[in-house]
Length: 264
Image 1: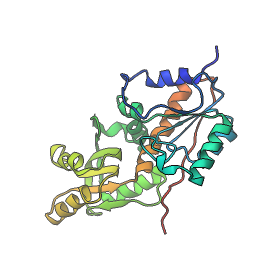
Image 2: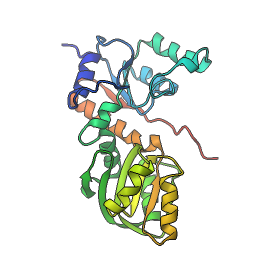
Image 3: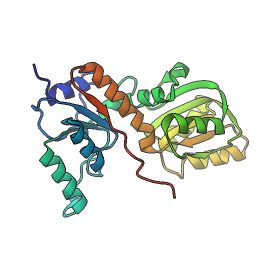
Image 4: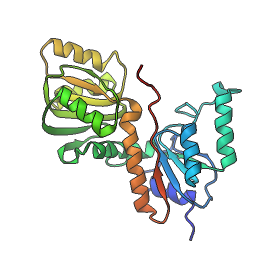
C-alpha cells in the first residue's frame, strides 16, 4: 500500500496531543500524494527546494516557514520578485512542503533539543529535561574549551559569548532556538546552580547584560550564543534519522542550510 503525505504527517503528530492553533500545516502540495522520498531541513530556502527536487524527493519537511514569516503573513511580499520566483518553483515542481515546528518542540524530550544533544554527544551528561531547558553536568572545562568544542561538533565558524573564557564550567543549561530571554534564563543560574547557559538566540539587552554584571561582581556565570539556526538544525538532522526508522522503504535525506549571516 502506498505511503502518502497524510500518512507521514499523521505519524509525526501521533506522539503529541493535537495543537488547535499551530503553524504546523501543509504549506504546499497535496495530502494524498504518494511519497517517493523525504527531505528535512531547518529552512526551506530556494537552494534547499532545488536540492530536494534534484534528489527525487517530493516531500520537504522544514522547521521554519517558507516565506520569511513565522505566521505565514505574505501581504508584505506582494509583487516581490524573490517571493514570486520561490512560489513559482514550488508550484511547478509539485513538491509537498510541511512545516514541523510546534509538534517537534512538544515531543518528550523536545525533538530539536534531542538532536542538539546528540550532535554534541552529551547524552550521558543529562541531569534533567525540562520543558524549555536541558540541565547537564559535564566534566569541568573552561569557557574557552567549551566554545571550541561547540564549534567543532556543530560546524560553527564563530560564537558569541559573555563571561570569563578562563572560568571552569560544569553545570550547563542548554536551550535551543529563541529561548534566550532574561525572564527564562536569568532565574536558571540561581535555581539550577548553573555556571553556563548556552542558547540559540535572545534579546541582547537581557541575559548577556545580566552576565556582564554578574562577572563584574565575581559570580561564576557565563553565556554562549550559538545562533538560532545553529542550535536547531541538528534537530532536523535527527528528524531524518527518525523518519528513516519510521518509513524504511522511503529514501530520506537531510539537507543542511548555509549560515544566512556571514562573518566579514
